[in-house]
Length: 62
Image (cartoon, rainbow, N blue to C red; front, side, top):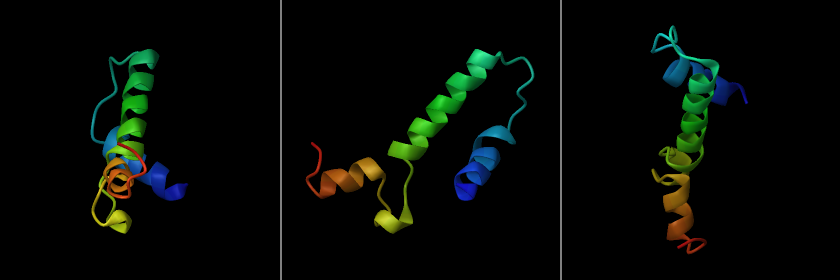
C-alpha cells in the first residue's frame, strides 16, 4: 500500500496546484488516476505490459 500512495502523491498530487478545484473535481481526477493505475500502467513484472495487455496475452480477456 505504501508504494501505491507514494506514487499517487508523486504522480498526481504534488505536480499540480489544486487551488480552484472543487472536491468533486478532485475526486474525479483521483478516480481517473486509479483506473489508469489499475488497468493501463506499464508494469515491469508483467513483461512491460499493462495489466489489460497481459490478461489479453494470456487469453483471459478479449
